[in-house]
Amino acid sequence: MRMLPVLSRLAWRYLWRNHRRTLVMLSAISIGAWAMIFMTALTRGMVDQMVSDGISVLPGHVQLHNPDYLDDPSITNRVNLTDAELESRFADAGFAAWASRVRVPAVITSERESRGVTLLGIDPVAERDFSFVDYAEVEGRFLESAADNGVVIGAKLADTLETEVGKRIVLMSQDPDNEIADRGFRVVGLFHADMETYEETYAFIGKEAAQKMLRIGNTTTEVVFFGDDYRNVEPTYEKVIAEVDDSVRVSRWTEVDTYLGTMLGVMDGFVLIWFVVIFLALSFGLVNTLVMAVFERVREIGLMLALGMKPASILGQIILESMMLLSVGLLIGDTLAWLTVKPLESGIDISVVAEGMEMFGASSMLYPKLYMGDVVLSNVVVLVLGFLASLSPAWRASRYEPVEAITKV
Amino acid sequence: MMTAVRCVDICKTYRQGDQDIKALDHLSIDIEKGEFVCLMSPSGGGKTTLLNAIGGLDIPDSGEVWVAGQRIDEMSKGQLADLRLANVGFVFQAYNLIPVLTARENVEFVMQVQGVPANERSEKSLAILEEVGLKGLEDRRPAEMSGGQQQRVAVARAIVSRPELVLADEPTANLDSKTSGELMELFTELNEHHDTTFVIATHDQRVQRYAKRLVRMRDGRIVDDVEQHAA
Image (cartoon, rainbow over all chains, first blue to last red; front, top):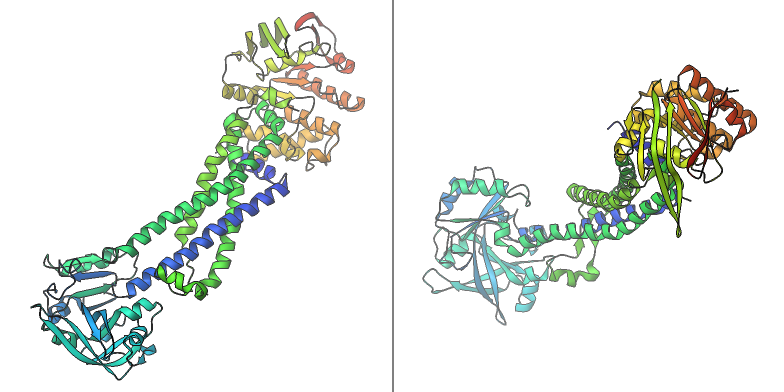
């Protein structure tokens, strides 16, 4: 530690001895750090939106089902708790939001076409927090209560069925006795979603109407819960577990939507690989800079050794030089990234490639997200790998024989 | 008297192309503490090699080198660095200074590595720079000074922490006669008042006049070793 001030002074001065080379290297590091963070912010934004859209398409953060429902999502695999029992257990348990619903596969038929859909019997008030549908933007109206007798379908599905608001359609599914359960509903609203798939897939009716049609009394097929952060659902999960027994299955959203859950994990790995790849490109420049910096001052290194500086201090000096270069580059890169990402957080319109993005479950607006964790990770990757990359030139510098180094021409 | 430097039967051979050059050939010498020794030889006579061996910068192929009572030819690099830091001041012929440091920082460098407190360093470095005639040039970098001024900074650095032994290789090579004289006066004063041992390799007749002992070398051997009354 005693040597730190003198080594820092030497490292900093030597860094600026050839300021043009240092500025070029600083630019490379800054742009590299900026690229790491900016691209990660874009990707994070995309994945966040996919996950958040995915979660808002009904999973919530935690779900409760009959233990067999996820394997066979039919009406026979209902939750064995009534609406009243659910209310008494969860109403005051402190969730950010929760709702129970009936969710079954069904067939929707107009006078011209039929399509398979997912039928959702919901309480629109409780469901507001979980829905990807903006109630106010619905063409016509959205459901008004759990007892509403209308149906709300996606605009795209309405096109396919050649139906419209005010017309009647028939919904058909199975009841618990495996008999056909069907009923006519009037289309009261058409919803629009960021992704056409949603518009084609879901049909909303009142929960009570669904319970009546399917002859399931006041039971439901799933209960969904929201906590505060989709990345940390454990507190919510524990709260639900505390209120139920083994007759139901409680799942985190990552277990319900394994695609999204896996994608989140893959994303973290991808970010790390991305950082390492960018650094590897940078490292050639860094090592070259250090090798040149050492080569230029072989005699001075010999002089310092002759004056009593230990080889370990020479090693430390070169590594410090590298760390200073990287730190300044990172500081500039981080600032640049912050300055470029922040204004874009309100959204970038990527509708030109929207169809391609939809394949991955992303919408036409991209909202870059700058996470402090990503900034820290990128900086740590650069500093740790930079440290390793500078070991070789630093080691070589520390191994010089003073008498040979001093007389080096 | 205590022995400051003892070399016993040291040999050093360099390979140059196909030829082996004997830089030191079974050389033995004792230098007592407080001596002012001048090593003289034609170019290639072995005086710089001997200085490097005494300073632990170069390890002889055989023989023993003792400095400050310690055998240094068997020491590790780290131990040699410690020995040089604590006991030896160096003045080289050229490339003496660290170019990114100012004159004062160059002088302070050894003391900083030694761990001398900042205010003491600053005090000593300003005093020694004044002593070598560089007052007012403390904040100049080597590139902003003449060769003579640079050499005086190097001398100031070598003596500022009052080492027991100062090894100087052609210290006056880049100095005019007036500055050479002043420098040698300074060496003499340090030698007489602080009992610092000086071993100087030089061709300069003016320097030889200040030495109390003249050691003439040829082909890596001592051919003449005489005491004289210094100027």
